[in-house]
Image (cartoon, rainbow, N blue to C red; front, side, top):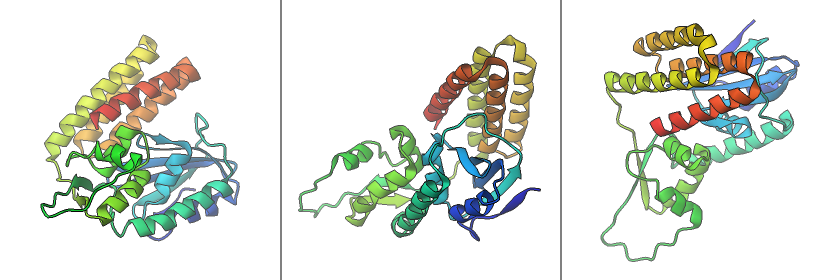
Length: 269
């Protein structure tokens, strides 16, 4: 029987703890706005997780700071790979620590969907000194990328970007603004284009033997995108392509497929 609820009521570490003590195997699906993450358990132990471009431990830590959204646990669903080797105890202790840290960060960083922009002050006289991490983030600030998107370009978690930004926001070097909402037609057009490129990658790596399956999955994704499912539709399509690749072509080809899709999605974002 599926177990579901709201992340406002229970933080993720507590939810994982509740399910893991029973030794269950299954998949958590977490959704927040257009974002979706997955955590797989095997006999109560976390073995794989993903959200956006993050997998494994970093995906767990990123998901653990979600303070809103929905979760659902479906028993019996197994992961097709293992990206986590640490024990639940170690992972949940670190997740809880980051959650506590996020409660402090959130006073200056309400959401990782916010966009940082550089502040200019004509009467500023003090010398500004930045450490290497701050310089790294500063070079990615363009007034358009969100904290999440900056993390993707640097291949680090949005949590780490928020930590780096915290001091610069406090010293008024950086300010945050909400990301402007794009028109549905514009967003759908970008997602349809992305879906087409992902389908081409699937055809390249899986081969002609799965052409009908690929086409059926692709068309289903297009229909879902046009009906407002957005990124969820793309995530579902990628998941189906990975399952097909694993079944027909094996682990090595599946990893190559996954890597290429990740690259295309990073560029698209």
